[in-house]
Image (cartoon, rainbow, N blue to C red; front, side):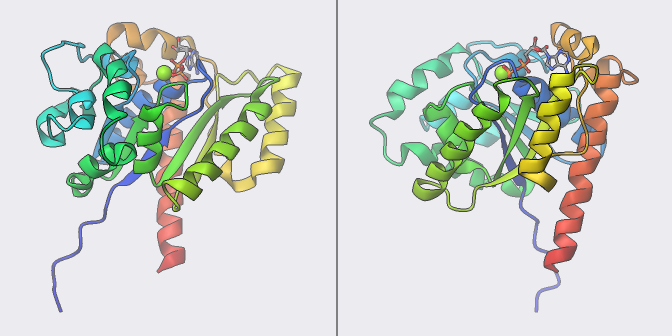
Length: 268
Ligand code: ADP
Ligand code: MG
């Protein structure tokens, strides 16, 4: 028998919700920084042509750099394109060029699996891979969902949130049937939470009764520091470590690690 330990593969998560403005990008950036602070090896992949996760990490959207676009169309490898941020994690950046990838991918073979195949080579380099998906079910998001083991769903506890979730659950079913049978829900994350609102409390408890354990106990409050940090090109943990936003994402990162350890024990 071999004495070398097998390298545990990365946990690959798509941060997704077809609704815009629910905190996907904020979660991808800040969770990456907090997981890195807890000594996890993290790769964040920006799958949104807006490139907000890229600039939010202080990486400029320079046209000359290879990005996730070059990876999808097979013109670059992950090892060439990833960039080390100053916050202890790697990023695969995106810029507007990525908007064109959809059209170019249409005629390519295995167009839904381009990202998954590119990631396979690097899965041993990381403990977590977090993908920031665009707010639409396009071929970019589909590449993210085909590559992922599970989805993390940030949501605001407001009137239409549960309706949106029904759509998302239907989408996940289709993805499982057609592309990626193992895809699970990693967790639902309540973001921009305002405990003073009665509606928020109602939606939040409905969420818990529908999804039970899948709802993270950690809740991200509405916190102005989280909204300010991107303009400094920093995750909030590097910008104002003691802010409520930073502490909430740190608690979430710890909760994820605890859950993962508990699941491993269950399986062992
Ligand atoms: P998405 O990626 O889902 O479109 P973003 O993460 O870009 O959403 O968030 C939308 C806006 O809300 C951004 O301006 C962001 O800075 C702000 N924001 C996100 N989360 C919070 C929060 N917890 N508190 C305050 N502002 C937030
Ligand atoms: Mg976004």
